[in-house]
Image (cartoon, rainbow, N blue to C red):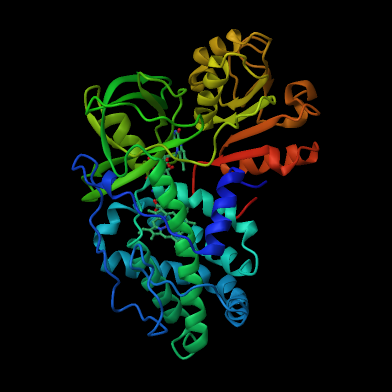
Length: 470
Ligand SMILES: Cc1cc2nc3c(=O)[nH]c(=O)nc-3n(C[C@H](O)[C@H](O)[C@H](O)COP(=O)(O)OP(=O)(O)OC[C@H]3O[C@@H](n4cnc5c(N)ncnc54)[C@H](O)[C@@H]3O)c2cc1C
Ligand code: HEM
């Protein structure tokens, strides 16, 4: 199941990739002190070996711009694919260790937990592998690039930081592959390939920043904190400066940044906006990550938000981004969620119900039990407001004393073969929005494809690192 960006973004990425066009970074949006940006060097590190002394520099950011890859260079990149398959994670582990060692400021930017668990090196290794394997035609990787550009924009990644990443990535390949092998034409080919990808990202991120009302972190105040269940709490946030709330598309997320005393640096995480865009507040609904049966690894930021963020407190928020959002057609929508994955879909449902002529919608959801069923009343009330009866199916995996037919419909894990075709709106050209744990989404994707739904109508949000298309 592909993670689908909208088609305009894809066209743009492809166009920039071909033309190497550059956008000016919106400097005016970075000037305000309240919208702080991380402070990184803005010149090219001289220790980054530039292969060709006469190589042109990008006129906008003063970054290396080796230009399009030659056929011979693409051949060399493809020849490295088996090596990446074998040693990709070793390379990216080595890369992160060296980069964060030499640039401790970046610990504020990357997830410490992902480093400890090894998730991030794996995500980067997969993306580098996918890029190399598709170097002749990047179409299959463009959805992943689109997604990671939104993630980068949400984390305020700047063009100059690509120099740091490029330097350490090439050095890590050199270290793992050996400097007697990774040299000459092969080194030059990877240098060119890295900068080709970097410029695709930089240009797309510049577009995203240009369309954003602010770049960097903006202070928001917690106006209300609502206990939804023992695991999930909603935070209603308003700008501290009293300015306008951001406009966003239902389904998009914000990044939230907090200083973590135990680490001594900042950490940020993404949270889908769980309410429809409105002029009163933005809302996130956060599940506390307890950290296993013995709570040996409690989640860093979710616990800080639950325990350390009170009504009236301030929190740093990035402008909303994300490539998972409700399309603007009038075709029916099927919203399929598991657990806290209901958050972006609740925002979509609010928007559908609030529209002048609501499109047809189905709500298909699995939660563990009634006491874990967050935003239950809110969703039920929304469904009642639709002018035509909304089709819904609720699974409880551990129903306990909950009443079948009243509180839930089906006992057990979500199984689309148990949901009737009318609710799934098969044959109605519906759009499907799926959000939940990774395995759940893979299962839903497979089930929908088996029922004849095309890839292009299935949209998925991963509450973790992006992978190559499922
Ligand atoms: C686009 C997007 C939207 C999202 N929307 C939402 C949302 O609406 N609501 C929501 O609640 N979440 C959402 N998330 C998830 C959220 O961003 C965080 O990932 C989540 O809150 C956990 O962050 P944390 O800092 O608490 O946990 P982290 O510290 O990042 O830990 C992550 C997980 O690893 C476990 N862990 C930590 N350390 C270790 C270790 N050493 N060994 C093994 N396991 C360990 C933790 O228990 C936890 O389960 C979204 C994510 C994305 C990418
Ligand atoms: C061409 C170069 C790059 C590639 C291929 C790349 C690739 C990726 C990928 C695949 C992800 C996972 C996306 C997801 O979670 O959905 C990611 C996330 C991320 N990237 Fe990049 N990236 C590049 C450049 C950069 C740069 C220059 C920075 C800034 C120093 C950066 C910082 C991050 C951060 C902070 C995350 C979020 C993960 C975390 O919190 O640890 N990346 N990147």
